[in-house]
Image (cartoon, rainbow, N blue to C red; front, side):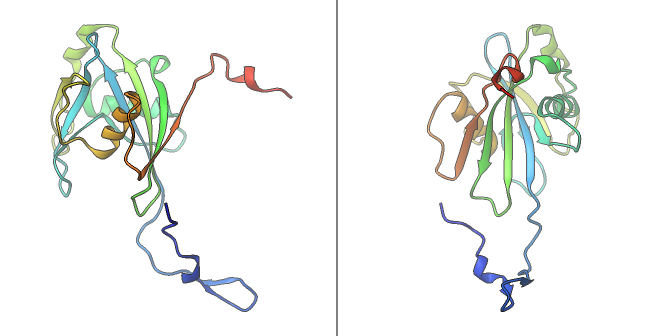
Length: 185
């Protein structure tokens, strides 16, 4: 994939120092989480996203990581904010880092999974942000709605070990039982 930033567009002096940077829209990185919540029958929770200015789509709960949060903390917060479901952080497992290379800005999604061990928790799920979500529903991975949010669709492909579109890069996360076991100082 070719680089989207043209270094030649920078104005440089004879000393090679950058004198000006072309005006661009906000290119600050977007780093977010998406959470695949599985029920006891291995169905996943998807919300019908109706956010103004976007095409209607189905997506996993998730959102932007806030300063000072781990991936798991961000996932638990976003799931609670969007669904009222409280997840045990120790059971949230990151499984991939996805980069949408078609975006004009750095757009990274951390894919995480969570397995409900108590089916009564499904009753807690509700729409808490009606300006963003119309409803929440459970779907089998073999019977998903066609209009999936791009990052959610990519997460599903990674989970099912299917080929991603060329503009997605995926980096698997393998959690060590003891993170220090691989370090030798």
